[in-house]
Length: 336
Image 1 (cartoon, rainbow, N blue to C red):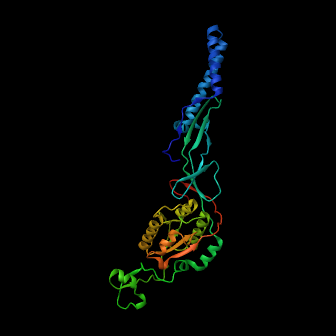
Image 2: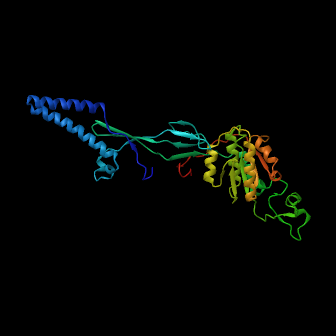
Image 3: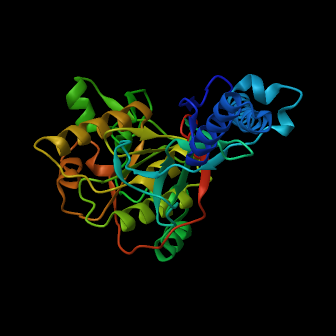
């Protein structure tokens, strides 16, 4: 909770003991004054003063001013009951909630905590809520078999599994370019000779696409994507997308993989996502690596028919490899 956020506190209310104490004290005070029995009046006054002291104690303890006062150490600290944990998907929608933090793969956000103040005598109580801000993601573990295969190929191998060079990396023809460097398809499109642009010794940028529309097994898909990202961990330019949003940093990618759930495709979803993938690939001249549970799914078919089909690499996701350690962060800063 930041310094600007204050707990929402309800008005102090007497407990059953406090009500009985107040009634009993008022009765003794009234009887003592009526009958002239000062002993009863003094006892009643003492009971009422104890109730008043308990109320003052609760009021001071629940206020910010009371916690900062010199006598703050003598005031009771609130009992804190942690809020429910909401399970979120990759779009931030709540899938369910539970009292205890689950150990399964997922992105979890804790709701407001309940605060309870009591005085030392148990005569008064005040309750409130305090924003939590806690967020925990449990990312998937990479598929060991797939990770070994991908790591043996290295970043160059994953990015260049296709036989043809990326037609997006072209430039106008220059004198001295050989016939093998000419992109006839792009030349016809532009109306002038276009040559493939040499990528140099560096590995070309990679766009990893997670096919959530064809994710019959979300755990397998998340683990397979984690394996691809692990194999590309030393690659300086890797972007992860599902065709709807994209994530560049490891923290963002872990959040997405932790919260990934299958999505039901409506009419035109696959086409719209394939177009978004094509735009991302063209902007950064990226090679596309599609990770999918269904190699004949709608998104895979749409990408195979696109202008980057020659360099498209499809990785079939199978098997669930479990989860890694939970990582805690804040809901306003991501998990890390």
